[in-house]
Length: 487
Image (spheres, rainbow, N blue to C red):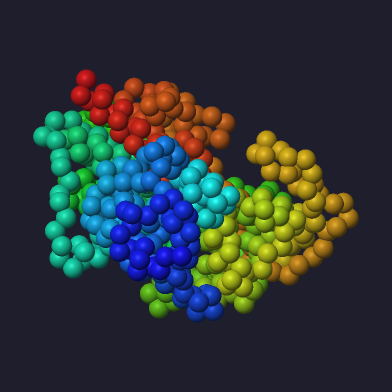
């Protein structure tokens, strides 16, 4: 078996057998007991040797199924070939041809069900866990680029087409909106992004915690757009006081892209959800992330004191809320989920990190009531046991309640993390904008809405999805917008 030094001396000489024999490089992380008490990033990133060894595992197969698995079509074998020989600037340039946010996507995207799922190496080794760790390598390359820029390195400016005189409004500064803005600006059009919050980034800023995605990275990506000439108007809610159609008819924009996300939280509609101490995960995470509730000396919002917290749900947002509650000082945090771990939609890595940090999981359990202490505050939940039945439309086995299994559990805080729906504001204030029964905007294959010169994408179309899926929709919309404006 070759040593690491021998592998890296001449990686181009490696055959498939040698590549398959290289071990998966584990991601270094903070120790669980330490990270549970701070807001610093949990995953520490690959060393240079780890990154080159992991990139050397790529078989460089001709079919490149990983590219088809990437919603924005990154040339993955291309950037890995540059990474394995230490040409990180060239690797970053390849990624940025199709992905504006590599440092973000490398941290939060579910690569295990996207680009890594069809990886030829993973299939040969009969485990997606043994696929090339594309996301970790994307993060490494992007971070090397960030470090180089911070150290004074000059990165080639983004090439912009000559000014066209056309103006495009982008409503929402999440991943879909930022992607559209970049691609449309490259085509020479003027771009203005309208953001309802006081900070740029959408769900990347208010939803994803600092310990998973440092907000400095989002600020850096926004700064790159500003350097390209994109203008941001913050604290601007498009809808009732500034109608969508008015952007076209009164403010002179030639096209509008709507990427406002899905920010309306779902609740269980069980008794007791109006008690003090019940939060939607949206509100809870926004207070902690956007308003820094964890910084007790400088926080722009009060912190609700919690000792025993129940988090309802099994997705990534539930994991974020549970791990945030622990960092905000809770003595115990329990995740209540009505299926088993195998059916959880959350990333396996996030579930594993939560378990390492001491989050307690109650599987096959779901609340039927939240009860109070007589003074309007949460005192606990009545939880019912479940068993798994036949698969439902999602392919997961359906949870079936066990009659008579209800029991009380004491909690002083309940966080509901059952996903989000689209805010109906735009649909209600924009006659002619067609939506479905969940207020998702209906679009065609080019992200065009039912209204002339208005496109949409991201969570407002998909429902709560991933950063990279939203970016994929943004790229399709930008192609269509650019074609329309050129016509």
